[in-house]
Length: 395
Image (cartoon, rainbow, N blue to C red; front, side):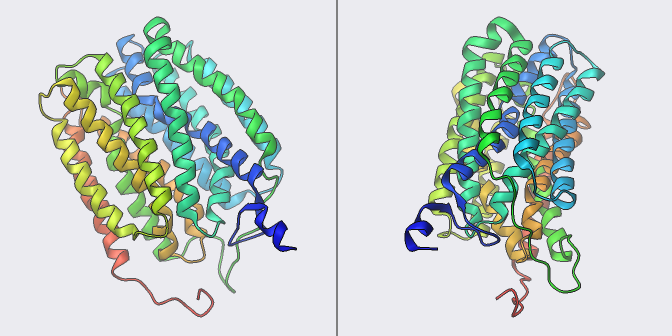
């Protein structure tokens, strides 16, 4: 291969051949389709409560089910499915996701849980395609940052459209219809994504699963992410308890997404220049301060500003979860499951939150989030300060 041909490639893989710029961009687009719902799920589920199609505890249960099935499917695909024929898989999954979103428009109560679980499983398949590329690159935190930034920018655009034009007129059904349209548009990047990836290497005598330290890193990731999931999904009820209306909650949602774009951009720019553990410490301190503010009777601008800062912090942190898992397991098998662990954490948080709230008081999610955050950070620190020396093969 000539030098000119090398420079034509945008992604230089640590595992497998390089990927062209078009393929890399399309793969990011597939992942955006899989996670688009996460940027608007608080206002969609909050609207279902306002329309008496869901209860306040049901917010946590519905979010948990969708994230749980998404995470389990991403993990199962990474462990069991060979990365072949991914374009066809992406096309079929995009259409199926649109059908699930449209079906949600006609449902209420327990049926919401079922259809969002189906949607989550489909989204997990789409996410697997993108995670497979990120885990194989030489600078995974940079590509995770690109992905998270692009994903969040897309979520921001959708959240603004829903908050200003769609949901005030059409309610929750308008939001799910918009998601269905986005899923159909997601067929385009699926057509241009790589059709296959190279297999990840295995050391002699090793299976395909993560080693013990890798499992510890995944558990720490689940707990840490669960903290944010527990608090974030109750955005609208927290606004109501602060004496604020649904409009403030929707504004807080899209301004948080705007700040997340900035956070993801900072993470992408600082990839390779800052240690992941320093980012974990900064993010934890920021979350604790913001979540305490959410328990106060504050004016709307304070509530919106606090959520915006939390959004910036969250997306600044997210790409550094990948190098954390690679340090724990240099084979990258754990990194391949990092996305699934984050989704499972996002599911666990709302599930636990549903146990500490009722229709009158949701402040329990804040104290729950703080406790989970500190436990997760302790797990990250334990792995960080008990690093093993690299083996000759890893070196």
